[in-house]
Length: 411
Image 1 (cartoon, one colour):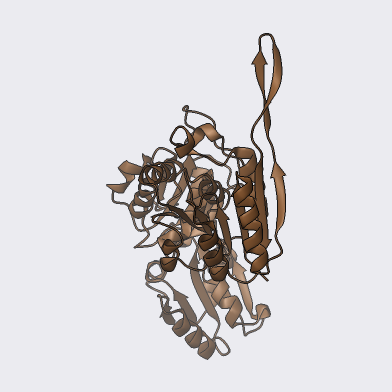
Image 2: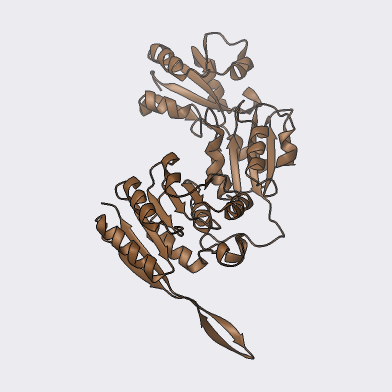
């Protein structure tokens, strides 16, 4: 094979001992050898120019462009260079026909092999140079198997701390796989609280696995059971019933990264349902009643939905500190429906959806009027539920009062 080309060789912790003959031949005939300090240390007697790979990838690319056309060049990397590695940057910078990749086992492959688990069903996330919140959404979604590539800031202790802060300390086991493939390899399993207090080698992979609790079954993807949501008894603890909640969510038309206002949140059931369904949402639960707010906060903690922000304030005054919404649900208005709906429509982003649950004919009539006045062209749905109940040895359907759902989209 003639020049020019760059050979990218993946290595393990065992260094040259783990390389095949082809990879060793390329290294022996190269004139330029690039790699991290750890990789280059394996070739102290190597004759030729070395390029240290550090955080300045642009500098590396510039130097490679200067030399690879005239000198055979080898780049050393960890594991599989095309799996969260330097391969991505090289593919952007050089023609594909001028790159050769010789991968090693990835650290993820080795980690799952060590704990004897399949990994085709795992979610893999790299925290190299990324904020810790990058793993927030899969944690809140209770992903059952997560593999995390760490760095000096986002180390196992920091990851474990986030799990505990989200109230998920009993939900996840933390497996830390250190120095994989090397003589000092170590694989250990911890509770999240215990892992927070430990020190680990900087060369590690973290695998998070859900721990099945005996307390009860996992929540369904859609339709959290009413009994799982804490709320006050009687009329002050009104909760949007499970079936109505699912219909309202459909009408809200939520998309990833949308902003949702749940106004008159009560127990927070709509906010909880939305946050549980799509952790990427930005959800605000707005409620004026202090006791109800405490229930919402307890529900948010209990479900581990840290991204739901609970606002204890009167609407519409509470709106001033919130980002413009993509979707608005109004479950309670405290007699201020006209003001709340008008201000919500004003703040609603173009194409945004508004859904109003009405339990009285008067509020339904007023909501219909307001939406029409603002040119939103509302549509209405009447929902009446009837659930079976025993009558001696027989059963009957006991109907509940109908719910009127108004919905509209802002042009």
